[in-house]
Length: 112
Length: 116
Image (cartoon, rainbow over all chains, first blue to last red; front, side, top):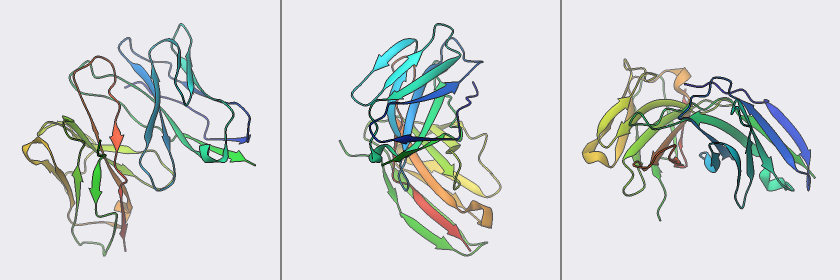
């Protein structure tokens, strides 16, 4: 399984753009990059997924360089409600079942 | 669409007692996961089912933990006997299969277990 490395914590002011980078140097050809968000006392929630280049949805953007050894989750104009832990996962289900591992995540604190 | 249901939401037991958690996945989801999340850590996969068969239980402490998924739908995770270090949130998740790449996991609210 590809191992991921992310910052343990980040602080940001409301209204700013937040970029969280994840390193995954040994990513495999079939692996996708997925980000989850977790609020206290809740299960993780899917945010965005990508394979290469850029993916954007209503919540976030995901930037993946050509070598795919890292990825950056971008949250535009964060609010207090974006305070959460963000997990970067790398894995696939080409082997018949999914193989992914959650790391320790990045704790984002949004400051008023 | 109904989400993943788990019960109970909270459980407090004495060490060496037994406890069981129940999970009902999203209808039609073939894959079901049980995770253990200790405070301050990411979720750790305990066991993964594809329909009613186990595909990964490499991190399940089999001397005390057991899980089953009857008829490929609901699942039960049991701890017998519990230890203090089992205090954690137990999360159940489910996902569909069939398309290439990674299929989104949908998580339940979790069961918070406290072992005294």
